[in-house]
View 1 (cartoon, rainbow, N blue to C red):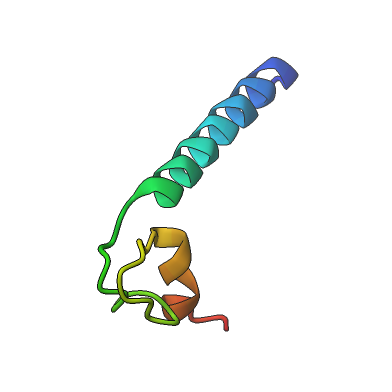
View 2: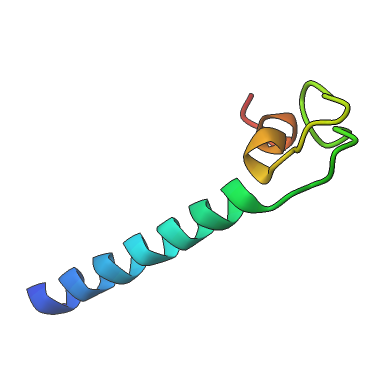
Length: 58
């Protein structure tokens, strides 16, 4: 693999990570809070809020 190809691959990977992060931070899972680690009735819950609940590493 050439250095230019590796650089292009890293740029694509960075772009993908940014898009995933953007999606996770704005995807609304609802206001009931059932997917959130600490349910908060009436407040929005995003994918980022829910990740700790389903993360198997915790």
